[in-house]
Image (cartoon, rainbow, N blue to C red; front, top):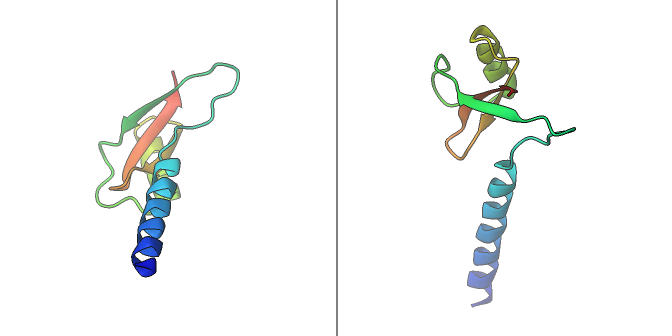
Length: 78
């Protein structure tokens, strides 16, 4: 029973960590950040710098890997 409880606690902790990474960017001075999924990025987004390069070719200043399925999301000030 104790082993099951420990396993459940571990799963809950991992879910909380995943949800914490889904939080949006920190915005200063009331600036809003608009997000758009990349149209050019193909495959699983594993490195933010690869996504950032593709987003720059699409006219966005930044890009990050986001979500459980690791999609490339381009960002810009609204």
